[in-house]
Structures are given as structure tokens and as C-alpha cells.
Image (cartoon, rainbow, N blue to C red; front, side, top):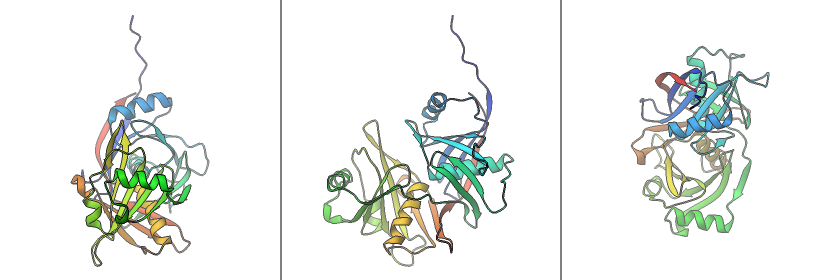
Amino acid sequence: MVQCRPVTVRRFSQVDVFSTAPYGGNPVAVVHDAEGLDAAAMQRFARWTNLSETTFLLPPRDPAADYAVRIFTAAQELPFAGHPTLGTCHAWLSTGGVPRTADAVVQECAAGLVRVRRTDHGLAFAAPPLVRSGPLEPEVRASVVAALGLDPEQVVDAEWVDNGPGWAAVLLEDAEAVLALRPGPTDLKVGVVGPHPPGSPEAFEVRAFFGVDGATVEDPVTGSLNASLAQWLTSTGRARTPYATRQGTALGRTGRVHLTRDDDGALWAGGATTTCVSGHVEL
């Protein structure tokens, strides 16, 4: 006899993040009311959605948080990710979520508490601190340069900019060099950035690559990477906030990420969010 696994009907949203035009940014799947799901069930569903991330909304355990979220790629759980943070907050607010304070929503995730607030450009999250920084080790740098198909002299700089997902960053001379990349396989999560000409609407072009089952995948628009790049670029004097980046161009997307900094030094990464799919799932 085949035993059926008990299921619960749960609210579901799919939110486009970092584009003012729907379907131009990076989608995230959001499962509301996720109590009762274990990690294996969450991972199974995230693998099935086949998006870069799927999130699960839960009641917070920390009394300072408005909600808790677990973030999964198709292969693993992440402690933090940028566009899922904004997409999940959008979904929570859109379905009646009311923050404890008027100035920000507080999200609880594996990386800790993350503040999210409304801005003129949409929702923005406060960039978490880097957990790893500094120059890439020579062997790592050589591996990244080879995977990107670059000559070593084309790399202006390369550093760890890891705020949870594990990003290694490469700075190229200009945006054209970034858009010309045709990377090969890599086991790392690699972000590449290059400046646009002065006077351009966006200061930098950004691309993000990571390996999946031996193949290299490009992420359309990446909040965590843009936040960590901003911490690196501003600390080295290569960028000044506020500024915007363009990402997803090589994939036909229209991603825009806006980076700002408060008087107290907090850096915020944000952009537009739009619900594109809403309904229910059986999990």
C-alpha cells in the first residue's frame, strides 16, 4: 500500500526583485505559513521550483524580529541572501504583515537580524557585515581568473567579499570587459564588477556566477553581492554612495540595485519588488 504524505495548503508568492518592469529582475518563491515543514521538505520544494532561491516564512523566535525566514537554493540552505530578503519582506507586507516599528521591518534569518525599510527606490536591506574579506589567496585568484577566461593583467583587483553566501569578487577595468565574459566551470561564487563611463545612469556593471553540478550558472540580480561589493568599493575609494548598479544585462534582464549609506555608516542595498504570482501550494 502506498502511504500518502500529509500535506497542508499554504499561501504562495513569487516575487520579482530589483526591476521596475515585472519579469525583468530576479524571481524568488515564497512559501507563507511554513510551520511544520522540516528542512528536507523545504529543500525538496526549493529543488522543484528550480529558482536561485526559495524562502519559507515562519514565526520569529527572537522577540525583536517581525518574522523568520529560511532561505534555500536548489542545493543547500543559505544563512543570508539579498534578493530573497527583499522578496520575502515584500510578500510578508503584501499579505498583511505589520512591522513592530514604523521605521523598519526586522527579519530573522540564520545570519541574524536584518533590517529592511522602504525607500524611494523600493525596499532596501541593511548590509550585514562581511564574515570574510581580504585578498584572494594566490591559488584561488589563479583559479578564478582561469574560470573567467581572463588574462591575469586584466584583473584590477580581487578580494573576498563574503557576507554569508561566500562571494569572491573580481574588479575589471570597465563595464564592457564585464559584459564580454564567457566563464567556464567554477566551484566558487564569483562576483565581477566594472565601472561604467562617468555620467552613466549606473556606476557599475555587475555579474554573478556560481557552479551547479559542474556547470556555471549566472544569477540575474544579486542583492548580497551588490551589498558586499559596495562595502569593498567604498572602503577602497573606488565608489561613493549613493550609486546604482546594473545587473542581468547579459541575460536580457533589467536589474538595478541602489546603494546608499546612512549618517551612522549603515549601508543599504535596495530596489523594486513586484508580486508576479500568487496562490497556494500543497506542502
